[in-house]
View 1: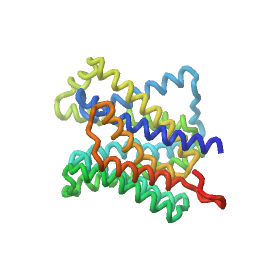
View 2: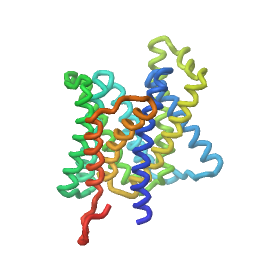
View 3: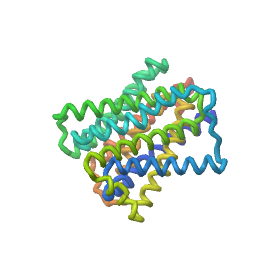
View 4: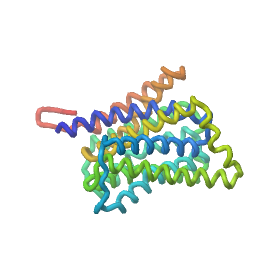
Length: 303
């Protein structure tokens, strides 16, 4: 039970960290392209984990273990998710991306029920839908061009949701053979290698290879990247630990909680306005997260 309670605590902390990281991502994009930022972010994360491993903070042991499972896991997240999401957002608005991303907990619940036989009650299903509606309500009320007119972008974002859901489900199985640290190190390393190849290919095709390292001359950008690298390490470790302790369907809904955190952080740090619909949508999201993780006991409800 201590492990389960810690997993729930980390799920909340993970959502807070992800929500706060949106601010850092916004700032970093002032210096580099999305793919270059992602490459430097994974590079920083991989360097941090490598230093931790080299200094004996944790041990890695992949000998005799099913590495093909880790390759499958990494192909879904971070490779599949970030690639599909990046291309999908090129053809859709940020509002459409936010709404579609909120569907990933629903996709996780469906896949978890099929492959992991995780059972969810009717109140839990209603709570999950309530949380998704909370995210959708916020983005729709912002009026950022909701229309879903470009089906190519919508399809890519839906595939990104499926990839994230697939990762959440497969990670439950992989955690039986690998520790959270071993999973995180392999995923971050794979993400760094793949994003580096993509970035180099794009710059070579555009003839801008010499500009790739230009943002590294900025100390502010370097600090932002180190911060994002630390966030990548923290969220990877927390996410893999959480999925080794609690059901994928319960874990998935915490993703929507990061929307609430990003709204609060945007207002507190960047001075972004907060309207009445932000409060209503946030209340729906929080109510959905709590409802999804309630257990019915004979003496009443317990979180």
